[in-house]
Length: 146
Image (cartoon, rainbow, N blue to C red):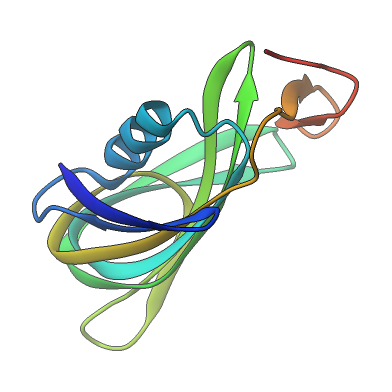
């Protein structure tokens, strides 16, 4: 599913072609017991599902894009919610006509490569809690999760 090498508190990670990115990142973080950190990367995909929050109605709208695209930016954070790993990842994808689409990354299937850096902040966690005002799962520093 992936290959990696560790450098201090960072991992250089390469996800295998045709794998689903979010699932691979989650599996990697679970394997390495990473509960707080960041992820960033680049690559190429043939399919992506992005999510956009409409703040007026506090509801998400998903879009599915099935075309060859470059990951021009993938960035996110790693935390926990209700004791479970929680990935919050955004991505920008470049299209053949050089326009871009982007949003909250729900899933993406690789078609080419995906090269990432995962930074592990070490022991501890930052929890999340649903905020009814925004409709988002925000950091909750009052919550201590094991």
